[in-house]
Image 1 (cartoon, rainbow, N blue to C red):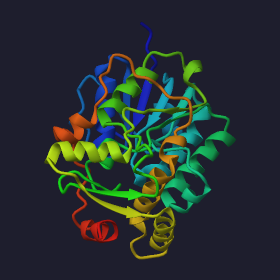
Image 2: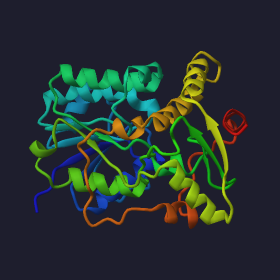
Image 3: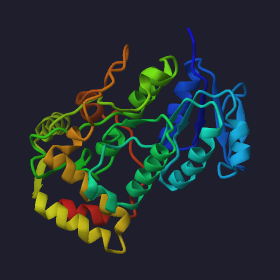
Image 4: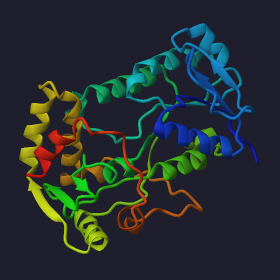
Amino acid sequence: MSYNRIAVYGHRGRFSSKILSALIASGAPITVLHRPGSDVSSLPSHVPKIEVNVLDEDALVAALQDIDIVLSLVGDEGIDRELGLVRAIPRTGVKLFVPSDLGLQYDQEALAIPVLQKKANVLETVRQANIPFTVILIANFAEFTLGSIVMGVDVEGNRLLYTGNAATEKASMCTVDYVAAAYVSIFTTNPVSEISNRAIGLVELAPTGQEIAAALEKRHGRKPDIFTQSTEQVTAEFLARLDSDLSALAPAWYWRKLWGTGDLTRLLGSDIWHVPNVRKATLDDLIVKGEVDTYRDLSQVLPILEEAMFK
């Protein structure tokens, strides 16, 4: 078996660390690029680690020798630093760049969200540099959709918000374990030519709101409390949040709108990758049995979200 030589930038995040662990366990030759001072003590000793400032082009070019694929797994705060990778790659033998995306093929409205505009800017710079690239699209992590209340699903409180047609539209999602398995399946052994210049979608499960309601009833022994919000309402609140002191919360309204209009599935595109030999999680696993992991700590904004959704 012939492996691609992969460099990973962004190793400490909750989701990125699991993806990196799966790549390392696959046996593929993985090199971790990290910022000066970044903690790499949790990484296996046999994994090469290169300390580099990605904005130092010459140093980064040297670090990318003998690399086939560069995977960026940085969080939202690191998107601008990806431009350093884009500037250096044309001076190397790197065959494919995979930016940190894990979202959707967003429409123009979404670009009002600053982090999505930054991601779009990175992709445009990649195109202008004629660098082969691939993006991985997942809609949302299941840990976000079901492990927090942001999408209107309150598993612990047995509450459910239907935005627009969310009762019958699908909420596409993937657990981080499925995404990690997909990265291994896609990038470790496939010829680069076969995975280049694609927007690859991942779908582990895509339940409708009604199917989520049934799972909540099965878990709690009673029907969930149902709340509703029109597409017009959620759009107006999204735009209002963008212009407020709480603009960081605005994407929550936008993603709920996407579910309610069916775009949470449509914007994944048609190039869906099926991960072989991996059991997909189900609503029984994640909701009824309570196996979904919680999302990040949202306690400081929880009252605001609850007031906006469950009233």
